[in-house]
Amino acid sequence: MPSISTKGKNMPESPIRKLVPYAENAKKNGIEVFHLNIGQPDIKTPGVALEAIKNNTIEVLAYSRSEGSEEYRKKIANYYKSKNIEVNSDEIIVTTGGSEALLFAMGSITDPGDEIIIPEPFYANYNGFSIASGINVVPVISKIENNFALPEISEFEKLISSKTKAILICNPGNPTGYLYSKDEIKKLAKIVKKHDLFLIADEVYREFVYDNEQHHSVLNDFGLEDHAIIIDSVSKRYSMCGARIGCLVSKNKEVINTALKFAQARLSPPTFAQIASEAALETPQSYFDDVIIEYKTRRDTLITELKKIDGVKVATPKGAFYCVAELPIDDADNFAQWILEDFNLNKQTVMVAPAAGFYSSKGLGTNQVRIAYVLKKEDLIRSVEILKAAILKYNAN
Ligand SMILES: Cc1ncc(COP(=O)(O)O)c(C=O)c1O
Image (cartoon, rainbow, N blue to C red; front, side, top):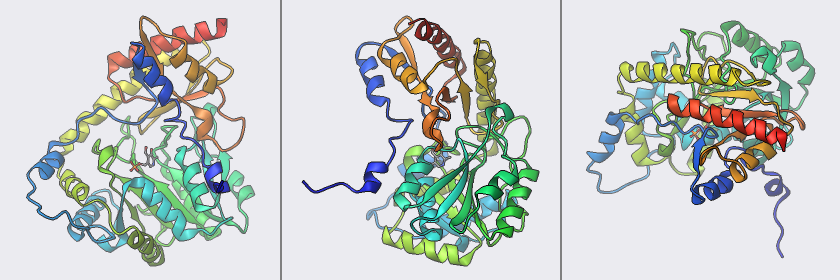
């Protein structure tokens, strides 16, 4: 029997998707499942994006340029200018989702055995992308008591070695919802310059910021032209997860030239989806204003309801649409499976993502779950009711 690679064996299952078979089973048994586990927004994709595909008269669905179509990249550069990010179209590589941008970034700057420091908990797929790239994640722990703020810079300093190539942040954070302050980005800028590291910033949730706070991009005005790599995506911004379009942005020419070689190897990003994504850039500001109001209401509802449950600890997110909640249970993996397999409240249950998969330190996050507030207010209220009843029953068993 030919054997599987160690890398393949070490690839983690997605903590977001691994419980899907249990949810499917529950549904087959007539149970309604509220999906709090996945960042699939229920918000409508902007009409301009969908119309651009419907009204298209393409006769040959050809490859595009490897770095993405020129017209699209020019328009993305204009979008960044509106965010005080001064980049040209040749500093952007269009990718098949932010996921591919992450792989290209890691591929372009690391060799097997190299290390990337990431504040944890972090987007679970960073683990998978790191394994696929043959590199090691070195976690620096951020704490729920602190709302998952940036850990002290001295904690990063302790972890930097000759193998360290980059610090990777997600801003605003998935799963924490934490929004880094200008001062925190300044501190990161200082340390990456001091140690000559890259700063990869996953900014796919840039638009989702609440309470009149401001998002600070690593390419704003921090002097990080040689160091910063932005990971971006249309998935969440325009509720277009299925388009599979993202981009990698850097003012460092070597990074772009190298990432382009990875892009050439996979030929091109999807053509139709680029047409939709280009059109999506015409989405009126009122769309985002409405979306932000909707998510803010959902966040406030979710956090208020969760805080009513005895023993639940939750950090209030300032951005994205997730929160990490600590539950009064022993093991969130068991709990999340049990709630789908053996529990329902009047034929309804919920699916949550156990948070351990968002950490790379073993033993952390075992009693935490990530909750995505991508459902409407009434469903969130009902979901927390179900969660509360489930916690009581689980602990009584
Ligand atoms: C933080 C973060 N980065 C990147 C991605 C990848 O998104 P996509 O490949 O759909 O652009 C996601 C998706 O959920 C995410 O949450």
